[in-house]
Length: 116
Length: 115
Image: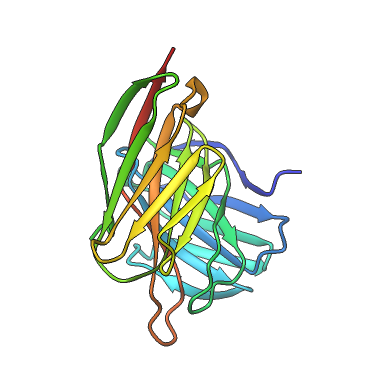
């Protein structure tokens, strides 16, 4: 029944490692997003895909690489993890808002990444 | 830079009282949305108001939008302990040609409702 599910929920890893976070939505939405929430609760968009096509790529280190095998899945791979990557990463989805649509986002429950 | 700034940063009220949170933004928007985030959880969409709307209601929630002042407010009436959460405004900018729409979030208001 979960609309947007992320795995894992918690991820503790050492600096320099490579890790992936997976996201799946069963809402039939066309667009998926990755957001990063820092320790001050500031939410910042990282990437967005619409039907497997990358449409938003904010200023994010190229150690972060998203991949969307189909419109229901959006994964985030992070290479050479750094201490500053510690945050909560949220996946979200929405119908395609194109240039002017009015839709709310459905968020997953987040992946808390801790780099030690 | 952050599109939305919320005020106050934190608000503590007693159950039954009303809670008002404000959001200001900087550029023209297509719509403004409010989300709730309980501690350790994801964000939940509460309400969306379009740029040509001035007020919207949903249950105990009332949202206003003043595009001339670039501000919005969220009113929660007859608050309950279960309303304790962080509340975020988010703006979808007016799209330029070919620009994908995205939500930009404010800094959030932490609401504490005590018995």
